[in-house]
Amino acid sequence: MLRLTAGGMLLATTGCSSGGATVETESSAGAILRSTAKLPEPFTVPLPVPPVRRPVRTANGVDYHEITQRAADVEILPGLRTRVWGYDGIFPGPTIESRRGRTTVVRHHNALDVPVVVHLHGGRTPPEHDGYPTDTIAPGAVRDYEYPLDQRAATLWYHDHRMDFTGPQVYKGLAGLHLVRDDEEDALPLPRAEREVPLVLTDRAFAEDGSFVYPSVDPSLRGHPGVTADYMSGVLGDCVLVNGAPWPVLEVGAVRYRFRILNASNARRYRLALDPPPPEGPAFVQIGSDQGLLAAPVEHERVPIAQAERFDVLVDFSRYTMGQRVTLVNQLGEDGTANVMRFVVARRASEDSAVPARLSDIRPLSTSDAVATREFVFRRGGAEQHGRTLWTVNGEPCSPDTISATPALGTVELWKLRAQNVAHPIHIHLGRFQVREPSRYAGGWKDTVDLDSGDQAEVLVQFDGYRGKYVLHCHNLEHEDMMMMANFQVT
Image 1 (cartoon, rainbow, N blue to C red):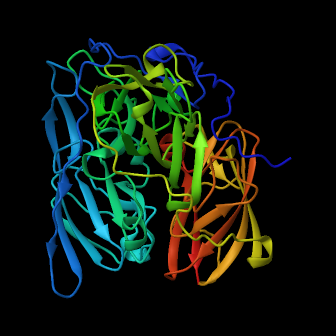
Image 2: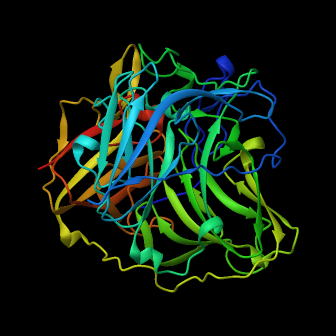
């Protein structure tokens, strides 16, 4: 039976308990790293908001940005300094905003001592600018990424995508938001300005001196790739960060807010809920997904979000009393990871937004649109490297020279994606898709789909924009680094 179990309870992964790892009892594939640093009390650190980069605009419709990838020491835990690898030295990186129809060019300077790759996740991007995993920027080098952004308004994000080392380099901080705006979305009476808030969810573990803990086989990230054996299923931290802050707090007015939620964690899933729930009405009204607006709002009491997924939701704080504390909780977490952040209804405010009954026109795809059907199985097995069993796609490890599919430009294909061993969130570059018979959490246009172990999703993938080589892969970053990725060539 086909089912999409976004947010469903997953089987616990049997991680080893040596080396600081513990058997994972939460609903994510992986093992927990335990912090030895003193973690702060939840809800004592204000929520930071990443700065928005201002472009240099030209008359020919091009917006230019310049970003340096560099190491910096920042305060994440109060009183301690953490070395991050950040875009412009901050974590998360600066938010880039673009208009549909205006080309954005981002010049990246690599001031780190390892190669990097930049992928605009969810971007409709030419292959030479998509961030293919082996298309690296060497230390000291510079590269321009050109994004035509002929696509709907959406919450995209950019992150490192270096072959074999995506997990540790994202964990060190190489991730940021890229928002696309358009006239259709601007015409809607949605919350704006300070009432439109990004929430980038990550989890990390900290050593006693405040540094990030990550179980790389080679901590220099210049030699042997991968993580130690205990963490082959995924790396889970014990401290939840939102916009780079541990369990932060945000004061809000008694009005409606829009939250753009991104799960930028390496391996952790969340099932988000409000505690206490509102006395009447839904906790969340979803207005958008990975690839922008839904056709109509969808009400949720909880929001399950896998790695790399985005949920664009509205929360109405006017239903709470003045001074009330409302906690955003993770129903899949335990101990510290059961909390995410807190809202405090601190002031009265006038409501100037509304929830439209219709958001966007989306033509549903059907199997009659598909010109081909393909199957991809994601599991551990079929190949070994350095004495380890790898994560594979159709039993094959990733190789830049192997092409697993050749869809034609301008067509739609039906792809059957099946997960084995553990859960896998699957991301397809370039090709946006619709899930056949979606759960209430998987509507609209998507670029990442969450699969529980043993689940299968049928997705109708639309290939338009560009010819060239792209990848699909699991977005559990430890699985991706251990070869769970495949190539397809748009012809």
